[in-house]
Image (cartoon, rainbow, N blue to C red):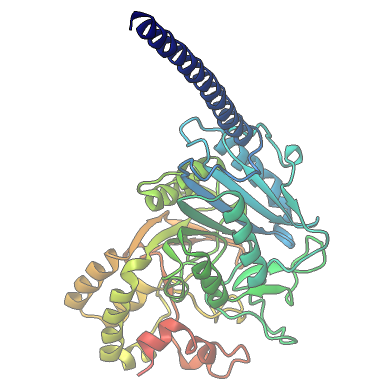
Length: 435
Protein backbone atom coordinates (compact mmCIF):
# COMPACT_ATOMS: atom_id res chain seq x y z
CA UNK A 1 0.00 0.00 0.00
CA UNK A 2 2.82 2.34 0.79
CA UNK A 3 4.51 1.80 -2.61
CA UNK A 4 1.15 2.18 -4.38
CA UNK A 5 0.40 5.29 -2.39
CA UNK A 6 3.79 6.79 -3.28
CA UNK A 7 3.22 6.03 -6.97
CA UNK A 8 -0.15 7.75 -6.81
CA UNK A 9 1.44 10.84 -5.26
CA UNK A 10 4.14 10.80 -7.93
CA UNK A 11 1.55 10.56 -10.73
CA UNK A 12 -0.49 13.39 -9.22
CA UNK A 13 2.63 15.58 -9.02
CA UNK A 14 3.47 14.82 -12.67
CA UNK A 15 -0.07 15.68 -13.71
CA UNK A 16 0.03 18.85 -11.65
CA UNK A 17 3.36 19.89 -13.17
CA UNK A 18 2.03 19.07 -16.64
CA UNK A 19 -1.06 21.20 -16.00
CA UNK A 20 1.08 24.04 -14.67
CA UNK A 21 3.07 23.90 -17.89
CA UNK A 22 -0.09 24.09 -19.98
CA UNK A 23 -1.41 26.99 -17.91
CA UNK A 24 1.87 28.82 -18.17
CA UNK A 25 1.96 28.31 -21.92
CA UNK A 26 -1.63 29.52 -22.21
CA UNK A 27 -0.90 32.64 -20.15
CA UNK A 28 2.15 33.48 -22.27
CA UNK A 29 0.16 33.11 -25.52
CA UNK A 30 -2.73 35.14 -24.12
CA UNK A 31 -0.35 37.92 -23.06
CA UNK A 32 1.21 37.95 -26.51
CA UNK A 33 -2.22 38.22 -28.16
CA UNK A 34 -3.18 41.10 -25.89
CA UNK A 35 0.03 42.90 -26.82
CA UNK A 36 -0.73 42.45 -30.53
CA UNK A 37 -4.29 43.76 -30.12
CA UNK A 38 -3.11 46.72 -28.05
CA UNK A 39 -0.41 47.54 -30.59
CA UNK A 40 -2.88 47.37 -33.48
CA UNK A 41 -5.37 49.58 -31.63
CA UNK A 42 -2.68 52.11 -30.81
CA UNK A 43 -1.45 52.08 -34.40
CA UNK A 44 -4.98 52.60 -35.70
CA UNK A 45 -5.42 55.67 -33.47
CA UNK A 46 -2.06 57.03 -34.55
CA UNK A 47 -2.93 56.41 -38.19
CA UNK A 48 -6.13 58.44 -37.81
CA UNK A 49 -4.10 61.31 -36.37
CA UNK A 50 -1.55 61.21 -39.15
CA UNK A 51 -3.99 60.64 -42.01
CA UNK A 52 -7.28 62.49 -41.46
CA UNK A 53 -8.62 61.31 -44.83
CA UNK A 54 -9.09 57.70 -43.66
CA UNK A 55 -12.26 56.45 -41.95
CA UNK A 56 -12.45 56.83 -38.20
CA UNK A 57 -12.52 53.72 -36.00
CA UNK A 58 -16.27 53.05 -35.57
CA UNK A 59 -15.71 52.23 -31.90
CA UNK A 60 -14.25 55.69 -31.29
CA UNK A 61 -17.05 58.08 -30.35
CA UNK A 62 -17.08 60.85 -32.99
CA UNK A 63 -18.14 64.44 -32.49
CA UNK A 64 -18.96 66.80 -35.38
CA UNK A 65 -18.11 66.84 -39.07
CA UNK A 66 -18.76 70.05 -41.00
CA UNK A 67 -18.87 69.98 -44.80
CA UNK A 68 -17.97 73.26 -46.51
CA UNK A 69 -19.46 73.02 -50.00
CA UNK A 70 -17.68 75.63 -52.11
CA UNK A 71 -19.20 76.30 -55.53
CA UNK A 72 -16.49 78.68 -56.72
CA UNK A 73 -16.41 78.24 -60.48
CA UNK A 74 -17.47 81.85 -60.79
CA UNK A 75 -16.40 85.38 -59.79
CA UNK A 76 -15.84 84.28 -56.17
CA UNK A 77 -12.87 82.14 -57.17
CA UNK A 78 -10.50 84.82 -55.87
CA UNK A 79 -11.85 84.40 -52.31
CA UNK A 80 -11.12 80.67 -52.08
CA UNK A 81 -7.50 80.68 -50.99
CA UNK A 82 -7.91 83.19 -48.15
CA UNK A 83 -11.03 81.46 -46.82
CA UNK A 84 -9.34 78.06 -46.75
CA UNK A 85 -6.31 79.54 -44.96
CA UNK A 86 -8.71 80.87 -42.33
CA UNK A 87 -10.30 77.42 -42.01
CA UNK A 88 -6.91 75.78 -41.51
CA UNK A 89 -6.00 78.31 -38.82
CA UNK A 90 -9.35 77.83 -37.12
CA UNK A 91 -9.00 74.05 -37.02
CA UNK A 92 -5.74 74.20 -35.06
CA UNK A 93 -7.61 74.30 -31.77
CA UNK A 94 -6.69 72.00 -28.90
CA UNK A 95 -10.25 72.11 -27.55
CA UNK A 96 -11.59 70.17 -30.53
CA UNK A 97 -12.19 66.46 -30.16
CA UNK A 98 -9.57 64.31 -31.93
CA UNK A 99 -11.94 63.41 -34.72
CA UNK A 100 -13.79 66.66 -35.26
CA UNK A 101 -13.49 67.04 -39.02
CA UNK A 102 -13.77 69.84 -41.55
CA UNK A 103 -14.45 68.46 -45.03
CA UNK A 104 -13.88 71.00 -47.81
CA UNK A 105 -15.41 70.32 -51.22
CA UNK A 106 -13.91 72.77 -53.70
CA UNK A 107 -14.96 73.35 -57.29
CA UNK A 108 -13.00 76.35 -58.51
CA UNK A 109 -11.16 76.88 -61.80
CA UNK A 110 -9.37 73.57 -61.24
CA UNK A 111 -10.78 70.06 -61.03
CA UNK A 112 -13.29 69.46 -58.23
CA UNK A 113 -11.69 67.94 -55.15
CA UNK A 114 -12.14 67.19 -51.46
CA UNK A 115 -9.85 68.01 -48.56
CA UNK A 116 -10.21 66.60 -45.04
CA UNK A 117 -8.92 68.74 -42.20
CA UNK A 118 -8.64 68.01 -38.46
CA UNK A 119 -6.86 69.64 -35.56
CA UNK A 120 -3.68 67.66 -36.33
CA UNK A 121 -3.47 68.91 -39.92
CA UNK A 122 -0.25 70.86 -40.38
CA UNK A 123 -1.12 72.63 -43.65
CA UNK A 124 -1.48 76.40 -43.45
CA UNK A 125 -2.50 77.22 -47.01
CA UNK A 126 -4.51 75.63 -49.78
CA UNK A 127 -1.33 74.73 -51.67
CA UNK A 128 -0.11 72.73 -48.66
CA UNK A 129 -3.16 70.45 -48.68
CA UNK A 130 -3.37 67.09 -50.41
CA UNK A 131 -6.83 66.13 -51.71
CA UNK A 132 -8.39 62.94 -50.41
CA UNK A 133 -10.45 62.75 -53.63
CA UNK A 134 -10.16 64.48 -57.01
CA UNK A 135 -12.61 64.18 -59.89
CA UNK A 136 -11.06 63.38 -63.25
CA UNK A 137 -13.16 65.95 -65.10
CA UNK A 138 -15.26 69.00 -64.40
CA UNK A 139 -18.69 68.47 -62.83
CA UNK A 140 -21.75 70.62 -62.22
CA UNK A 141 -21.44 71.38 -58.50
CA UNK A 142 -24.84 73.08 -58.50
CA UNK A 143 -26.53 69.77 -59.27
CA UNK A 144 -28.26 67.94 -56.40
CA UNK A 145 -26.62 64.71 -57.56
CA UNK A 146 -23.14 66.14 -56.94
CA UNK A 147 -24.08 67.45 -53.50
CA UNK A 148 -25.52 64.03 -52.62
CA UNK A 149 -22.32 62.29 -53.73
CA UNK A 150 -20.16 64.63 -51.65
CA UNK A 151 -22.38 64.20 -48.59
CA UNK A 152 -22.20 60.41 -48.82
CA UNK A 153 -18.42 60.57 -49.23
CA UNK A 154 -18.26 62.78 -46.16
CA UNK A 155 -20.28 60.30 -44.11
CA UNK A 156 -18.22 57.30 -45.27
CA UNK A 157 -14.87 58.95 -44.60
CA UNK A 158 -15.67 61.12 -41.59
CA UNK A 159 -18.74 59.62 -39.93
CA UNK A 160 -19.90 61.62 -36.92
CA UNK A 161 -22.68 61.87 -34.40
CA UNK A 162 -23.62 65.30 -35.76
CA UNK A 163 -23.09 67.22 -38.97
CA UNK A 164 -23.04 70.81 -40.12
CA UNK A 165 -23.21 72.14 -43.67
CA UNK A 166 -21.76 75.37 -45.08
CA UNK A 167 -23.06 76.40 -48.50
CA UNK A 168 -20.53 78.82 -50.05
CA UNK A 169 -21.27 80.58 -53.34
CA UNK A 170 -23.56 83.09 -55.02
CA UNK A 171 -27.26 82.81 -54.24
CA UNK A 172 -30.61 84.56 -54.54
CA UNK A 173 -33.01 83.23 -51.95
CA UNK A 174 -36.17 81.40 -52.99
CA UNK A 175 -36.07 82.58 -56.62
CA UNK A 176 -36.15 79.50 -58.88
CA UNK A 177 -33.21 78.59 -61.07
CA UNK A 178 -33.22 79.67 -64.72
CA UNK A 179 -35.18 77.73 -67.30
CA UNK A 180 -33.00 76.39 -70.11
CA UNK A 181 -32.65 79.25 -72.56
CA UNK A 182 -34.45 81.72 -70.29
CA UNK A 183 -31.67 84.21 -69.46
CA UNK A 184 -33.83 87.12 -68.42
CA UNK A 185 -32.53 87.19 -64.84
CA UNK A 186 -29.43 86.06 -62.96
CA UNK A 187 -31.45 83.62 -60.89
CA UNK A 188 -28.93 81.85 -58.78
CA UNK A 189 -31.09 80.33 -56.04
CA UNK A 190 -28.01 78.62 -54.60
CA UNK A 191 -24.68 78.22 -56.33
CA UNK A 192 -23.41 79.42 -59.67
CA UNK A 193 -21.35 76.93 -61.62
CA UNK A 194 -20.46 78.46 -64.96
CA UNK A 195 -19.15 75.15 -66.30
CA UNK A 196 -16.19 76.82 -67.95
CA UNK A 197 -13.40 76.33 -65.38
CA UNK A 198 -13.19 80.10 -65.24
CA UNK A 199 -13.70 82.81 -62.68
CA UNK A 200 -16.41 84.68 -64.60
CA UNK A 201 -20.05 84.86 -63.58
CA UNK A 202 -22.54 83.96 -66.25
CA UNK A 203 -26.28 84.56 -66.33
CA UNK A 204 -26.85 81.09 -67.73
CA UNK A 205 -24.70 79.26 -65.18
CA UNK A 206 -26.03 76.26 -63.30
CA UNK A 207 -27.96 76.78 -60.05
CA UNK A 208 -29.51 74.50 -57.44
CA UNK A 209 -33.18 74.82 -56.52
CA UNK A 210 -33.84 75.01 -52.78
CA UNK A 211 -36.32 72.14 -53.04
CA UNK A 212 -33.53 69.94 -54.45
CA UNK A 213 -31.15 71.04 -51.71
CA UNK A 214 -33.75 70.17 -49.07
CA UNK A 215 -34.40 66.73 -50.55
CA UNK A 216 -30.70 65.82 -50.72
CA UNK A 217 -29.97 66.87 -47.14
CA UNK A 218 -33.10 65.12 -45.84
CA UNK A 219 -32.07 61.91 -47.63
CA UNK A 220 -28.64 62.25 -46.01
CA UNK A 221 -30.35 62.20 -42.62
CA UNK A 222 -30.36 65.92 -41.89
CA UNK A 223 -27.78 68.20 -40.30
CA UNK A 224 -27.64 70.32 -37.17
CA UNK A 225 -27.24 73.52 -39.14
CA UNK A 226 -26.94 74.95 -42.62
CA UNK A 227 -24.90 78.14 -42.77
CA UNK A 228 -25.20 80.06 -46.04
CA UNK A 229 -22.12 82.13 -46.80
CA UNK A 230 -24.12 83.53 -49.68
CA UNK A 231 -26.45 86.45 -50.38
CA UNK A 232 -30.21 86.70 -49.78
CA UNK A 233 -30.66 83.21 -48.29
CA UNK A 234 -32.44 84.09 -45.03
CA UNK A 235 -35.94 84.27 -46.41
CA UNK A 236 -38.92 82.64 -44.75
CA UNK A 237 -39.56 80.76 -48.00
CA UNK A 238 -36.07 79.18 -47.98
CA UNK A 239 -36.10 78.37 -44.26
CA UNK A 240 -39.52 76.75 -44.48
CA UNK A 241 -38.45 74.56 -47.40
CA UNK A 242 -35.42 73.43 -45.37
CA UNK A 243 -37.31 72.88 -42.11
CA UNK A 244 -36.88 69.08 -42.24
CA UNK A 245 -33.27 69.21 -43.43
CA UNK A 246 -31.61 71.21 -40.64
CA UNK A 247 -32.34 72.28 -37.09
CA UNK A 248 -31.06 75.79 -37.73
CA UNK A 249 -30.55 78.00 -40.77
CA UNK A 250 -27.96 80.76 -40.32
CA UNK A 251 -27.90 83.29 -43.15
CA UNK A 252 -28.43 86.89 -44.23
CA UNK A 253 -31.59 88.28 -45.87
CA UNK A 254 -29.37 90.80 -47.66
CA UNK A 255 -26.14 90.79 -49.61
CA UNK A 256 -23.22 89.57 -47.55
CA UNK A 257 -19.81 91.30 -47.53
CA UNK A 258 -17.47 90.30 -50.34
CA UNK A 259 -14.87 88.67 -48.06
CA UNK A 260 -17.56 86.48 -46.48
CA UNK A 261 -17.13 84.82 -43.10
CA UNK A 262 -13.97 84.94 -41.02
CA UNK A 263 -13.52 81.19 -40.87
CA UNK A 264 -10.79 81.30 -38.26
CA UNK A 265 -13.49 82.14 -35.70
CA UNK A 266 -16.41 80.57 -37.56
CA UNK A 267 -14.83 77.10 -37.55
CA UNK A 268 -14.46 77.22 -33.78
CA UNK A 269 -18.12 78.20 -33.45
CA UNK A 270 -19.29 75.50 -35.87
CA UNK A 271 -17.56 72.75 -33.87
CA UNK A 272 -19.34 73.65 -30.62
CA UNK A 273 -21.91 71.10 -29.51
CA UNK A 274 -24.00 73.49 -27.41
CA UNK A 275 -25.58 76.79 -28.52
CA UNK A 276 -23.78 76.41 -31.85
CA UNK A 277 -26.35 78.47 -33.78
CA UNK A 278 -25.87 81.46 -31.48
CA UNK A 279 -22.10 81.05 -31.55
CA UNK A 280 -22.02 80.94 -35.37
CA UNK A 281 -24.30 83.96 -35.53
CA UNK A 282 -22.13 85.92 -33.10
CA UNK A 283 -18.89 84.96 -34.87
CA UNK A 284 -20.16 86.31 -38.19
CA UNK A 285 -21.62 89.46 -36.66
CA UNK A 286 -18.46 90.27 -34.67
CA UNK A 287 -16.50 90.55 -37.90
CA UNK A 288 -18.71 93.24 -39.47
CA UNK A 289 -21.01 94.59 -36.76
CA UNK A 290 -18.81 97.31 -35.29
CA UNK A 291 -19.78 100.93 -35.89
CA UNK A 292 -18.07 102.37 -38.95
CA UNK A 293 -17.36 99.03 -40.59
CA UNK A 294 -17.07 99.33 -44.37
CA UNK A 295 -19.61 96.56 -44.93
CA UNK A 296 -21.97 96.00 -42.02
CA UNK A 297 -24.11 92.88 -41.74
CA UNK A 298 -27.66 91.68 -41.19
CA UNK A 299 -27.63 88.05 -40.12
CA UNK A 300 -29.98 85.77 -38.23
CA UNK A 301 -30.61 82.19 -37.21
CA UNK A 302 -33.93 80.44 -37.73
CA UNK A 303 -35.01 77.56 -35.51
CA UNK A 304 -36.69 75.30 -38.04
CA UNK A 305 -38.47 73.10 -35.50
CA UNK A 306 -40.64 76.13 -34.67
CA UNK A 307 -41.53 76.93 -38.27
CA UNK A 308 -44.58 74.70 -38.64
CA UNK A 309 -46.30 76.40 -35.69
CA UNK A 310 -45.24 79.80 -37.03
CA UNK A 311 -46.63 78.98 -40.50
CA UNK A 312 -49.99 78.03 -38.98
CA UNK A 313 -50.04 81.34 -37.11
CA UNK A 314 -49.04 83.27 -40.25
CA UNK A 315 -51.78 81.57 -42.25
CA UNK A 316 -54.29 83.18 -39.90
CA UNK A 317 -52.54 86.56 -40.20
CA UNK A 318 -52.63 86.40 -43.99
CA UNK A 319 -56.26 85.27 -44.03
CA UNK A 320 -57.25 88.24 -41.83
CA UNK A 321 -55.14 90.82 -43.70
CA UNK A 322 -54.88 89.54 -47.27
CA UNK A 323 -56.22 92.69 -48.94
CA UNK A 324 -54.15 94.92 -46.67
CA UNK A 325 -50.99 92.99 -47.58
CA UNK A 326 -51.69 93.18 -51.29
CA UNK A 327 -52.51 96.90 -51.25
CA UNK A 328 -50.17 98.36 -48.62
CA UNK A 329 -47.63 101.07 -49.42
CA UNK A 330 -44.22 99.42 -49.08
CA UNK A 331 -42.15 102.37 -50.22
CA UNK A 332 -40.55 102.92 -46.81
CA UNK A 333 -40.47 99.31 -45.63
CA UNK A 334 -37.10 97.79 -44.78
CA UNK A 335 -36.02 96.21 -48.06
CA UNK A 336 -32.87 94.27 -49.00
CA UNK A 337 -33.41 94.59 -52.73
CA UNK A 338 -35.53 97.24 -54.43
CA UNK A 339 -37.24 95.90 -57.52
CA UNK A 340 -38.37 99.35 -58.72
CA UNK A 341 -35.10 101.19 -58.09
CA UNK A 342 -32.05 98.98 -58.59
CA UNK A 343 -33.09 96.55 -61.32
CA UNK A 344 -36.00 94.27 -62.07
CA UNK A 345 -33.95 91.07 -62.02
CA UNK A 346 -34.97 90.34 -58.40
CA UNK A 347 -38.23 91.06 -56.60
CA UNK A 348 -38.28 93.11 -53.41
CA UNK A 349 -36.79 91.28 -50.44
CA UNK A 350 -38.89 92.93 -47.73
CA UNK A 351 -38.08 92.29 -44.10
CA UNK A 352 -40.94 90.27 -42.63
CA UNK A 353 -41.27 92.53 -39.60
CA UNK A 354 -41.46 95.63 -41.76
CA UNK A 355 -44.28 94.07 -43.79
CA UNK A 356 -46.21 93.13 -40.66
CA UNK A 357 -45.95 96.65 -39.27
CA UNK A 358 -47.79 97.91 -42.35
CA UNK A 359 -50.90 95.84 -41.71
CA UNK A 360 -51.13 94.81 -38.04
CA UNK A 361 -52.51 96.82 -35.16
CA UNK A 362 -50.25 97.61 -32.20
CA UNK A 363 -51.86 94.81 -30.20
CA UNK A 364 -51.49 92.33 -33.07
CA UNK A 365 -47.90 93.42 -33.56
CA UNK A 366 -47.06 92.53 -29.97
CA UNK A 367 -48.36 89.02 -30.56
CA UNK A 368 -46.50 88.74 -33.87
CA UNK A 369 -43.20 89.71 -32.22
CA UNK A 370 -43.77 87.09 -29.52
CA UNK A 371 -44.34 84.41 -32.18
CA UNK A 372 -41.39 85.55 -34.28
CA UNK A 373 -39.08 85.49 -31.24
CA UNK A 374 -39.68 81.72 -30.98
CA UNK A 375 -38.24 81.32 -34.47
CA UNK A 376 -35.68 84.04 -35.21
CA UNK A 377 -32.56 85.34 -33.50
CA UNK A 378 -31.17 88.51 -35.11
CA UNK A 379 -27.88 90.38 -35.05
CA UNK A 380 -27.57 93.49 -37.19
CA UNK A 381 -25.45 96.58 -37.63
CA UNK A 382 -26.99 99.95 -38.54
CA UNK A 383 -25.88 99.66 -42.16
CA UNK A 384 -25.12 97.02 -44.78
CA UNK A 385 -23.32 97.35 -48.08
CA UNK A 386 -25.00 96.61 -51.41
CA UNK A 387 -23.08 95.93 -54.60
CA UNK A 388 -26.18 96.90 -56.59
CA UNK A 389 -26.15 100.57 -55.59
CA UNK A 390 -22.57 100.57 -54.19
CA UNK A 391 -23.74 102.28 -51.02
CA UNK A 392 -24.05 101.57 -47.33
CA UNK A 393 -27.79 101.22 -46.81
CA UNK A 394 -29.44 102.00 -43.52
CA UNK A 395 -31.15 99.45 -41.27
CA UNK A 396 -34.34 100.48 -39.48
CA UNK A 397 -34.12 98.21 -36.45
CA UNK A 398 -37.78 98.85 -35.66
CA UNK A 399 -38.63 97.15 -38.96
CA UNK A 400 -35.97 94.44 -38.93
CA UNK A 401 -36.22 90.82 -37.80
CA UNK A 402 -33.53 89.52 -40.17
CA UNK A 403 -35.79 87.34 -42.33
CA UNK A 404 -37.18 88.47 -45.68
CA UNK A 405 -40.53 87.58 -47.20
CA UNK A 406 -42.13 87.95 -50.60
CA UNK A 407 -45.50 89.60 -51.13
CA UNK A 408 -47.21 88.66 -54.44
CA UNK A 409 -47.94 92.20 -55.58
CA UNK A 410 -49.60 93.22 -58.85
CA UNK A 411 -46.45 95.03 -60.00
CA UNK A 412 -44.78 91.67 -60.68
CA UNK A 413 -47.70 90.31 -62.70
CA UNK A 414 -46.50 91.63 -66.05
CA UNK A 415 -42.88 90.68 -65.48
CA UNK A 416 -41.35 88.01 -67.68
CA UNK A 417 -39.53 86.82 -64.55
CA UNK A 418 -42.80 85.25 -63.34
CA UNK A 419 -42.14 85.97 -59.66
CA UNK A 420 -45.81 85.77 -58.60
CA UNK A 421 -46.36 82.54 -60.50
CA UNK A 422 -43.25 80.84 -59.14
CA UNK A 423 -43.81 82.06 -55.59
CA UNK A 424 -47.13 80.23 -55.41
CA UNK A 425 -45.28 76.95 -55.98
CA UNK A 426 -43.18 77.36 -52.83
CA UNK A 427 -44.16 75.31 -49.76
CA UNK A 428 -44.51 78.48 -47.71
CA UNK A 429 -46.98 80.00 -50.17
CA UNK A 430 -48.93 76.74 -50.38
CA UNK A 431 -49.25 76.52 -46.58
CA UNK A 432 -49.66 80.23 -45.78
CA UNK A 433 -50.91 82.22 -48.78
CA UNK A 434 -53.06 79.88 -50.84
CA UNK A 435 -56.70 80.03 -49.72
